Image 1 (cartoon, rainbow, N blue to C red):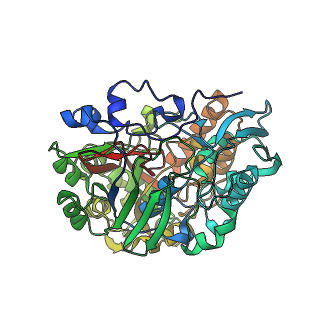
Image 2 (image 1 turned 90 degrees about the vertical axis):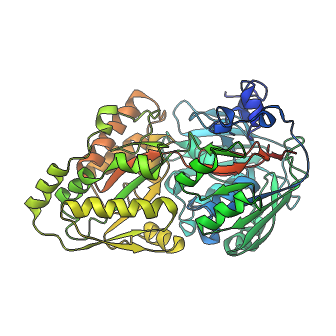
Image 3 (image 1 turned 180 degrees about the horizontal axis):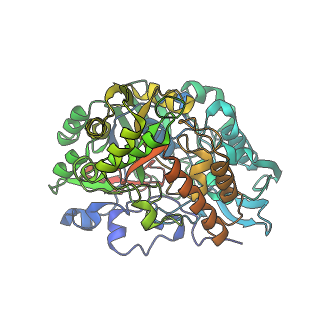
Length: 532
């Protein structure tokens, strides 16, 4: 039986981090600001010695608005901000490990055959409406997440849960169709939803969770308002009375708002802006280590000439990954040919350098194919994607693949990604490789072996992905062997050309202390306060 020593699952303060991460217990120790540069070189003396203060309204700025219909897709900052502030999960992964710690589930027992999991639930949790949280809410949340209506990325794992024993209101036993090596990934990902307001969630009229803050209003394209949940199950949390989140889609305006003091947190700045801003002690950089994302070029293999693997491999060889890391990411990442971060059980250093830049090899492959007509490159304009699109266009033009840039807004981009509607090439970020490796290939829109944005299908790929997924222990030697087969298929087929693994970076004013994040880049302000 796993019984973590603490049931707290919030972020830690920078002060606590500097004192050695010793005082909070397993559930809270590693969720928060472990990636904060201020904890190392960015801190000033006030940050080091400040004591949490109660009250006040935290002003925040984000670069994308919530899209209610996509609420369970984890696809933009509007969604991740609301989920991080207003919702809870059954378990929590610390940022630096794929190991479950307690949250709404206090403890758990996985059956020896890997086909069932029993969880003991907290009995002191209430929804923002005042209704008590019970095992029925776990069943409802998982089933809702599995509903195709919501197009959630871990839907296949949720759908593999075939039975729910809720005879005890504070205990639930989940039965599986087969062993699920990534079951705790799912429990860390599915927010606990309120069955009584689910129709309002779909339209954005209400967002009712059990989290530290209550949503009091959403003005589309403008702002999201939160107030403190006075009945929150973690004692004396949160510190702040309220949070006001402004939707600021223009990166320059977002930067200006932070510099002028209108906001104390910004998500959506370029790496260069964050670097320049945090060279001063007035601002802090939060590097989301453990929540890595990946930059990649995707190919619709149903479109000529992208149906030819030689073209896709030529694209992989042509990409100037070092330039992307240096200029676009400002060093906050490293080059990659595969999606796995260095700490992943699927990481293979030699395989990860398979597609180092080789312009001559790329040109040779294109010469074998013959002249190529102009291809569209679809992307969502952001500071990172704008810069990346220009580099990719130049790289591919150099080897004889002419590119027409096709910028689309965020909602349209996500629609094309989920619906596999790209007209040719696209660039984007993806996630989920920071979890159990099997989660990526049975879940993420670009990688899902059963249905993906590239229209790529392979018996070898599907069998390897399914084998990795159905191993009871996702870190076992058997699972690792399956991951190797998945990786080889990704390299051989090259329907996705990885560029770099990187750490997203947020910026805050020195006034805001204790801000943190989850492994899915959800904003956590449970332990945050305003200094001075």
